[in-house]
Image (cartoon, rainbow over the protein chains, first blue to last red):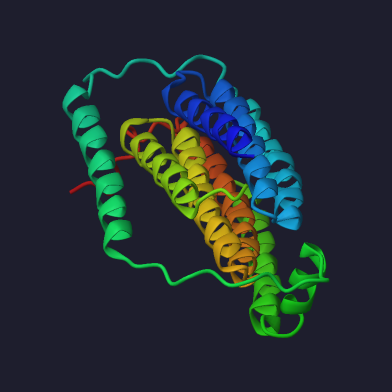
Length: 165
Length: 101
């Protein structure tokens, strides 16, 4: 199980690095799909079967199709051309800031003391537990989410309809 | 064989930092957007790992809502990128300096 975790984690990290450092946006998108699949595998290891399925369907399916569609629509076949100013300093500062963010999170984790874990409630599958929670404790957020999706649909249609005046 | 929660959090931190690097050094708006998705994914991973640790379903519920918000964000964000491309003929963030003082 741990071997599988290390394998999937390595796949996720390598494909994530390739997303960042590929010059070609289309290849970045394809590596991001590999990354999402690896993370979905880790969700399976963490006993979150429903979320893993949703991750594959929504992220690796719907969202990445949208990304690929837009990349091809905008005809970004050429790799990102090197800018007139090479931005070496900015890249350096970006890397340092990202490393600092990571160190800050590690520091926060080491400061925190996690309370002991609890025992699993037996007899309920993952999807059943989520469904029960969704329609009892989290009913209001669930309904608000549907309104959010409606807003997003209307916004996307309005933005994509015609030229911005 | 239980995977310690530290492993999940370490992988989550590493993926998040990678996403931060991508957002800070890339110049293509779509790639920056993909890196933001990767950061959202890293946070989801931390939620799932902690949900597994506490044996509670609430962490998975939050991942569910983050996924929904991410889907809405991608729909609107990509529509914005397409609109910007139509208007200015480029999605390189160096060219989008009209708000610069």
